[in-house]
Length: 97
Image (spheres, rainbow, N blue to C red):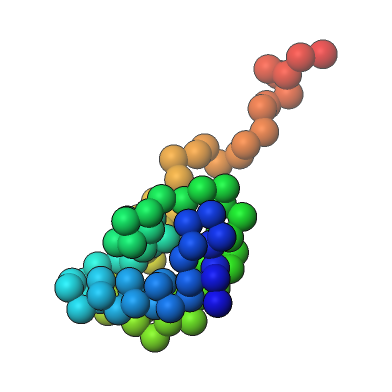
C-alpha cells in the first residue's frame, strides 16, 4: 500500500528500512526522518505522517532498545518542574489594574 504519495513510499519500503536500520545498528532510535533518509527521500507535504507513523508502529523491529527505555523517565524525574517557579500566575501586586 502506498503511504506517501509525494515520494511514492509504500508500507513495504518503511518496514524494510526499519529492518535494515535495526540490523545495521540494534541500538539506534528509529524516527520518520531516519526512514526518509534511508530511502533517499525527504518529506513533502506531511499529509501522510499519521499513516506513516501507524505503519512504523506496526513493525516488530521498531521497539526502543532496552538500554534506552529508562532514559526518558530518569530525565523527567530529575527535572520534574522543568525550571518553572511554583506558580505560573503573576502575583496581584504586580498585575495591571
